[in-house]
Structures are given as C-alpha cells and as structure tokens.
Length: 388
Image (cartoon, rainbow, N blue to C red; front, side, top):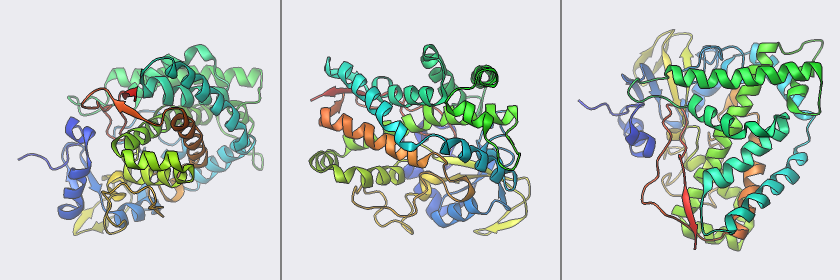
C-alpha cells in the first residue's frame, strides 16, 4: 500500500498540499513510516503543540533529520528556561542593530541586481535576485568576508537538504554543515581578538546579569542565522515571486497599489510558507485524535498544512492578497516564533516592491519548477524568468 505521506517523495516536494488535505481529513494524527514519526496536520493541533513545549519538546532538535551538534545550542533546539536565556541574549545582540539600518543596504543590493537583470531579457530569480539580497545583506550584518558568498550558499542548501534514497542526511550533507560551523567558528575567534560593529561581535558581547553565550552557542546561533537568511528568507522571497507569477491578477493589483504588498506577503506566508514542517519530541504521554503519543516519540508539526486548514481559514486554497490572515504559522508559534520575523517582512517588502516597480510582468521559461529536497523546507531550486 502506498504511504499517504512519504516525507521523502519528490511528488510531495513539488506539491504537498493535496497530501496535506488527505491527512487533515482522514489521518489528523498520522504515523509516517518513512519518517518514523507522527505528523500533526490540523491548525488547532499544530498551534497547540507548538505552544506546549512541556509536552512537545524542541530540546532534541527541531529538524526532522537532525544535524549532530545543533540540539541544545540554538533557539530552535532548546526549551525554557535555557531557551529563554538564549533568546534574551540573542535579542540583546539584535537590539544593538536598528532595523532601519537594513533599509539602505537592502535597496542598494536590489538596485545593483536589477540593473544587471534589466540589461538582459532572461534571468534566474533565485540566483540573480533573492539570494543576492539575502546572502549579501546577511554577510554585511554578520561582517563576513565577501569572497565566501557562493560557497556558503551552496553548503547551506546542501546542509538543509536530504537524500531521498537514504531517507535522511548523508556524509555529504553533514560535511556541508561542518564547513559552515568551522567557517563561523573562525569568524567568532576573530571577533574575540578584534571586535567590530556587527552581529557576531554583538552576540559575543551580549550580557544580561553577567550571563553570556558560550563559544558553541555563539557559533550555532550564528549558523542558524546564516541558514535562515540564506535558505529560509531567500526561499520565501522566491516562493512569493512564484505566487505572483501564478496569480497575475494579484500581481497587477499590487503594481497598481503597493499598499497591498504587506497583506500579500502575509497571505504568501500562509498560503505557501517555505518552513513546511518542524520536529518535536514527546515528553509525556498524550492523546491526539485517538492515538497515544508516548515519551520519546517524534512528531512533525506540519505548518504548511495547518495554514491550509478550512477550520481556521475560509477558502484556504484560494490565494487572496486582501485576506489578512490573522494567526498564520508562517513564522511558527509560541516560544519558537521566528526572532527575525520583522526583518524578514521588511526585507521582502522592500525587495519585492523594487522588483515589481522595475519588472511588473515576468513569465517562467520552463513548464515545471524543480524543488530542493528537504524534509523540513520547501524551496525552488531555480526560477528561470523572462521579462515580458
């Protein structure tokens, strides 16, 4: 019998939403043989579990195929009180950089990228635009050397990917994460010797009542920021561009009235978030839809499915840029709500407004889009567009 939801299926990478609907309506607490875990797919269940850290813990990692060494050292892989300490220290570092400081460099990189794109008719959105902005901005914020852009991006994408045949991560994937953490470890050591006005230094210097982050925590927290900036933000911006391609009337309405851009971003976060699924581990026995989840069981919280639940959102499969979807899970929920959500929203709004001002009409040059292989995230490998 074919498994209703195979976490390592290319078909699900391409379009998980019909499969999510099957889970929500028939198997709301589903045991995935491929992932050896339970999948929660309805909004109420996912939202409740995301906020109940005492039952559904992140302390053993939040990635379905976890990377060794991450658990316990990042915001996403800790529970209170350790999580509260890490978040407070990370926020202290973030607060030293005003959000407004991000505006000028975002527009500078966007304008430079668009100048190159407009010089030719065809372009690849991920490589030529979204990654240029997110990776370039991230490197400026962290104070990382320019020369490492392409290599870091390649290794980040590899680190968050999975092997379909192996149903997990291979040595190649783990080596990619080691490359990132080793690189950042060297940068942290440099900041200790020569502090700068950048986020790595601020993390190293962040202090609350004499408490500071350890060396491992700084490296792993910085690695999380790099992976989120390179993969998650770039992927969301790319998915947003594809949504506006697939729904040209929505794109035309935004171009005619950029006040619609903010609600369109929120609708895209609901409709097609790049962060599709995150893992938790059961800490105490609990019942969900007649199933007994025991301590030690792994659970996938399917945010991408919860955001399409008709019990929460009317006509959930309709892309409505004026919906203003309150309570969507595009940035998670509870203690693990995304620390960089404000920055992600702002960078996306600035970048996409600039893009649509210069390129209001664009078209895919290929019939189908390839998607990266990941048990957690959903992102296009490439979006080859031409200006029309």
